Length: 90
Ligand code: SF4
Image (tube, rainbow, N blue to C red; front, side, top):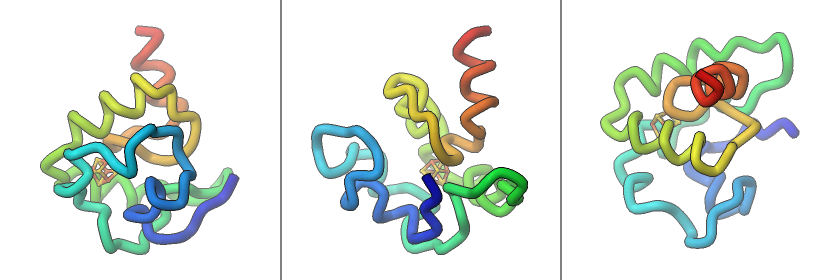
C-alpha cells in the first residue's frame, strides 16, 4: 500500500496496527507534520525519510515499536521493512 500523506496521520488513519491512537513517544516524532514519503513505492527513494529519522529523538522507540509490531510497510526508526527484517532475524 502506498501512503504519501503526513506520517503524523498514520496512527489516526489506522494505517498501522496499534490499539491506542498513538504511543506516547510519537508526540516527539520528528516526522510529525512532515510531508516526506515514509511509505513509498518500489524504486522510490527512502533517503528523505531516513534523513529525518537520523535526527529524531525517539528513533529507538520507533524502531522497537516497528519490530515488535512487525510493521511490514514504511520507514520506521530509520530502517526500511527489509532492513528491519534483517535486524530481527539477526
Ligand atoms: S524514527 Fe523516523 S519514522 Fe520514527 S518517529 Fe522518528 S522520524 Fe518518525
